[in-house]
Length: 416
Image 1: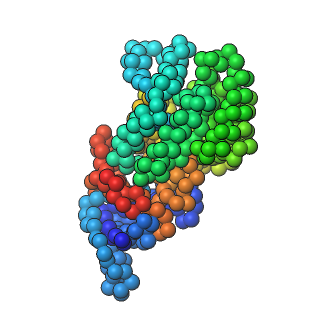
Image 2: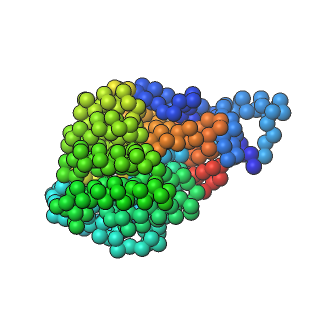
Image 3: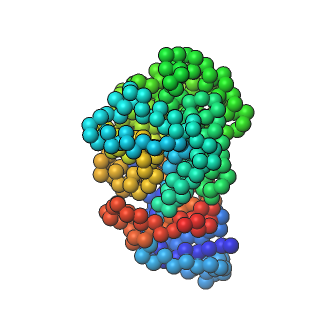
């Protein structure tokens, strides 16, 4: 059924003009149409002004079927959350309380907590329990405007448990109405049983896990946490090259805890995105610009673990492709609300409202290789969008801390 939304106070198209992303200064161009209208079924058929719509109707070019009046509302593309860890077992609220008392994230990890706490909970959980956790978080994200996700494994750190996580993600992909891209992150940390045998665990990843993931068609991407205290450049490169050899695209955790050189490695290997980048160097920024690798920034993590924010202003002004994502996970950023992420980006990373919207929509889609299908409201793209109960997109940032999303639409159907 063809539907028309009319009288839209602020229609934010993030028009891409056929490009798969926006970089640098172009991120400011969000293609707002005031008093706009949109026609769609499963795909977007047309966008324009109300006056243009009236002309097409009067000329018989459009036959209205269902009409929605969006006076006083804002319509924009659904958020694409391109970096999440929302499938996991266990709970780390007690560790969070310790950090509030001054214990650092790194100290907890060195004690055997952090990621390894979640590994224990995940190994003990059933697939059904993992699906239940992921479903609850994903549905809440959808209520807040997310229409596409990337979901990672990485809390199993054994062949059995990593496959279990990816199977849970597959079930969510089959069950939920949104798009879900799946990432294998066996190289998230080293499990306790391989703490003193890194080569042995990397051999397990490269020779057993990745081939099995590929055989079962459980992931599109391969990721590795290449940073101080985690995977060295050489160790991470071994994992990522194995992923490439098995046909997986790359997404990489880079330079979150230190200027480690992992951004340069990610770009050299042709990674789709380099994520975190709190301590990215000038050399890394230049490599991102030259390579076209998406710089995915996760301000919720910097906020949650009290770390410096990634240099968003420098990345954008240098001409990089910048995306925003939640990094929703049980240890270092437990929020699935992309509206919160946008607020943190504009206040604490000096991004403009327009840049933040572009980063959370079109460029987020580019970070999961889906921007030809979603991330902007243009004819031929999937009808993934949100209707916000505000007269202008600027109100999404001005009135913060609440959920402005009134309706979430995916594939042309209202899901919230």
